[in-house]
Length: 248
Image 1 (cartoon, one colour):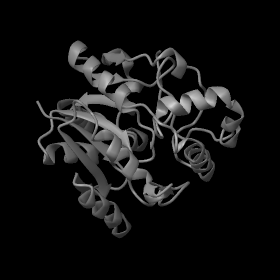
Image 2: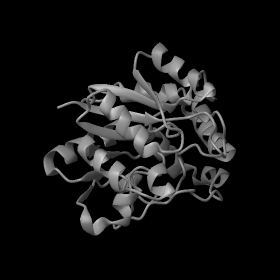
Image 3: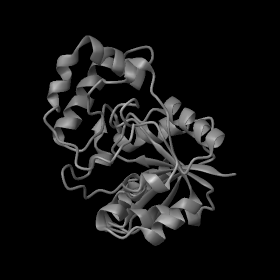
């Protein structure tokens, strides 16, 4: 059984173009994500799924430099891009990662994969009401389900946001939710990078924590934000562009 992370990323983001290659300290956002994923206990493969646009060649070059696989597919039909990426590399189980989530938590991801393998749901996630903070969670599903979604999802939103059809039709699917550690819950903070304000918060946190013995990791960031909650005001006014339906 081949388990892999597929990272969706492109350079022409509407609100913050080029964000995947923007630097935090001396490394690009995408570098942090890839290096963290390499520490997983479950992943046999890491795949960058980008587009065929000229500007996205820089992402393909970074993938080659960091010795991970890459696939160039549809720009706006992200669901098909995921399906085609998984098919190209013969994947069985896919962990969905977005290229603007610099703090994707590998420990939480591995626990979500373990939950998926144990309960065998259609979808396993560690986000939601009692889950990990926005910008740190993942989704786990099978290649077979990706194929099925690619056949039945019709709307532009459903094809852009990959798993949205599942959330809109929860009566038809089994979803397993992994609860986050208590300290991570109800933090009410944006740790994704979708706007300049989001990047400002991430860089502020990096500047404060880069010398921390545990490094620039979610656990240390959560602890720091509990002590200095005023930092959350940097991007608290930003509205999340795509909020999925959640039952928990």
